Image 1 (tube, rainbow, N blue to C red):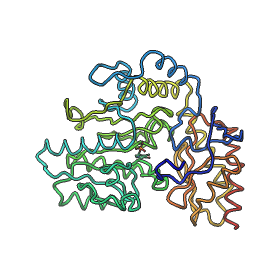
Image 2 (image 1 turned 180 degrees about the vertical axis):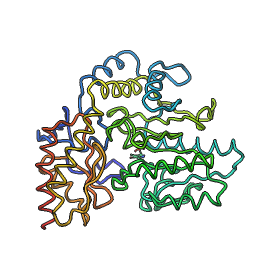
Image 3 (image 1 turned 90 degrees about the horizontal axis):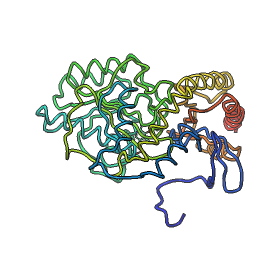
Image 4 (image 1 turned 135 degrees about the vertical axis):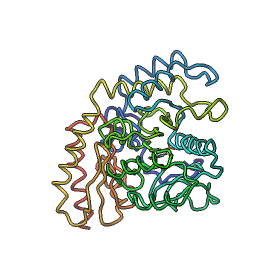
Length: 390
Ligand SMILES: *Cc1c(COP(=O)(O)O)cnc(C)c1O
């Protein structure tokens, strides 16, 4: 531990094995995983389909280079285009990298239109990553503090406030894109309404802006559809993915369509590891397994069940502000900071998370069953009740 850079407040537990929605620690204690490595382990742990695909690929070819054709990456791009309605994919390794690609794409689009100092409208409480450009796009002063000067070219507005965006549109000629999460994850499970997303899409069209959505956390089936934007019946120009895309193997993607397609040429962007055969196969197996096992429907059903049960058990409890979310991306907002609940849950054999100090965040694997959902409610509700009494 002492030789690691001190970048995380780590719980004093280490896991040695996982199976489905359960993890086992070094002492042999078993935990129900309602966090999935923060929306990463889409298929839970040690899913046979993913395991077989990875084993097969690892025995053949791990890595070549993007200076060669990579059929697995081409197949992944085709699948992602098919389920999203966007037409092009850049494959990378993480969420911040996917967003870096999106930001570069938006700037490049601006320069092609003759805008030399392009700006991107971003949201309060947004989270887009920890690289310099993505932390500058992030709407959280704690994440930015100490790393100034920030990357310029971002204009911030309140999430959900259409008037604020219209006001900027009325006078600013340097805007090239709007970028937001369909559901803000780190920002506390905040949902964009369909009307807001439709109005943003319309405004982007009127002003020739790109509409970019960061679905790093809410994409890949988590909300019950492949992508969060699909609930609103819109199509963005750019979408970024990572977290759940490879079910635990690091892989990210920046997708483009419409006016954002066809912009980059050779030399404009790249990545050594991005979309190597192993990572591409992990993402392909994830998509195929979500389809084969009906996990979009499962995310909807389990999410609805959890929301209903949690609401029934907690709605009248003083101190519970709101239970919200979509599919298996749920938040329980309390009226006070509650990070100690993470420790209490750990003791009770349950993995959860708290974000923005007061929001309990649930992001279970998409294979979550009703038995597991019952166990989650059975463990979590008494913890919350006791905490709020104390
Ligand atoms: C986690 C996250 C990121 C950053 O992803 P990394 O893989 O950690 O770089 C970006 N955007 C959203 C919405 C996220 O939840």
